[in-house]
Length: 365
Image (cartoon, rainbow, N blue to C red):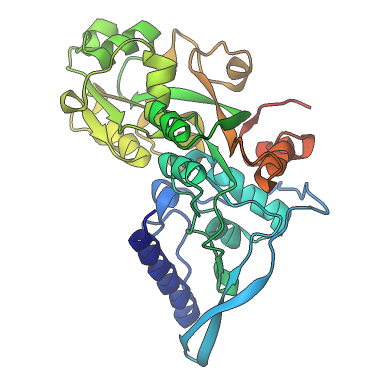
C-alpha cells in the first residue's frame, strides 16, 4: 500500500473508532463498510456453541501499548493508542483464511469475537503477498473496544493464503526472496452453477474446453440448449491462480476480453446465481468460501468426474481439484516470530484450532 493509501485507511479507521465512541455503533461482521477481505464476506464469523479454549499459556502475545493521539469525545478529549506486535506475528492473507486468523486471536489473545474480527483484517491474496515480499505493514487491523491501532511500521511476518501466482513468485525472485510455504489445511477448488441447471457433474476435460472456448453450449455437456456464460476472476486473485495451475495447466484460457471477468469472489458467486439466463452460468471458487463466508442459496456445486468435494475425497486426493491453504514466510526470516507461529500452526494444538475454525486440518493427530 502506498503512503496515500495508508493515510486514507488510517482516516477511515479513525472515523470508525470515533463512531464507536460517539454512538456505541459497531458495524456487523461482513457489512459493506469493511475493508479488504471483509468486503467479500456476508456471513458472521463467530465462535460456535461448542467452542473450546484449546491454547493455554501462549508464548504469542502483543507488546506494549502507547498513546498515539487524541480526539474530541462527548466527555472531553479521549486518547487512542498504538500497540506493538510483541511476540505475536503480523498476519495477512486470503479472504478464505480470515476465520483461521480470527480463531487464533481468540485462542492466543483472549479476544472477544468482535475484537478478533477487527484484529484479523486481511488485504486479500495479492496484497498479502506484496506485503510479505516487500516487507510492508498490514495496517488494517484494530482493537476497537480499546481504541487501539496496530503498529503501522511492523512488516507482515506471515501470510495464510492460497498458492502464489507466477507474478507473485517473480516479485519474490526480483527481490531476492524465496517464499517458504507449508500446507496447513485442505480445501476443494469447486465449480458452481445456478441451482436450476440440470447438469450435476462435469469432467475435467469439459471444464478445460469451456474455458478455452471449445465448448460454448450446455447441451454439449449434458445440459439444455443454452450458450454458456463463463465467469472468471482477475489475474493474481487466489482463485484465478488455482484455475490456471490446478485446472487449465497447459491449456490456455480465453483472454479476458472474451469472457466475463469479476473482480471479487463474492461478486462472482452472485453473478453465477443471478445471471439473467439463470442456469446458463458457470464460475469457480473455494468450497470453504461458499460454505462458510459467502452463502447464496441459488447456486450449487458441480461434481467433477462424478466425484464430490467431501472431506474424505480431499484427504485421499480423489477429488481432482483438491488444494490447500498455506502458511507462508520469507526465507530470510528463519528465526522470526512468523516461522515460530507457522510451526505452531502445524502442531497438534494449532491443527485443532484450525479444525475448530471449520477447516479440514492438514495433519490428523
